[in-house]
Length: 130
Image 1 (cartoon, rainbow, N blue to C red):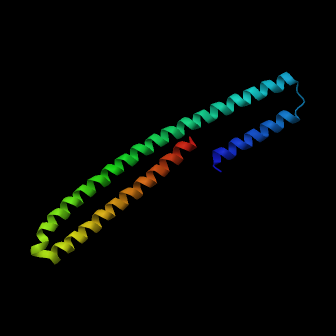
Image 2 (image 1 turned 45 degrees about the vertical axis):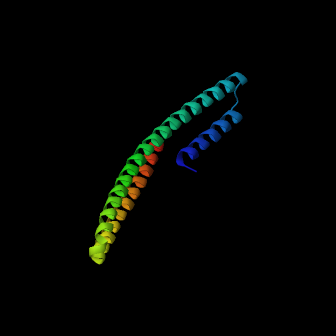
Image 3 (image 1 turned 135 degrees about the horizontal axis):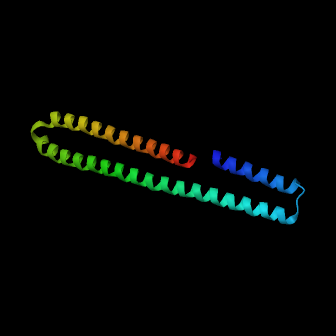
């Protein structure tokens, strides 16, 4: 349960207890219930808007990372084709170069994915705390 959910639940329980235990008229109680419902609706609407914005931002971040990964894949394909042509002449040397390049590019892809996931996580948490 998130802090926001816990806080909202605590407010609702406290509000309900206050209304049920307070010696007020029916009209006053209904007015308080209406005000509490309006506050809860406004609060949840604001949080929903923040979550929606965070989701759109996360989508943009993920799309940018996907573009980066796609570029790396295209570059790797070109390198593999070039290396395949040279393999007949310099098989061992080119295979080692290709292996090293593949490790480097895979490392970049993993790093990009990790940074992207962390950014999405940070941005979403920050937005939901607003």
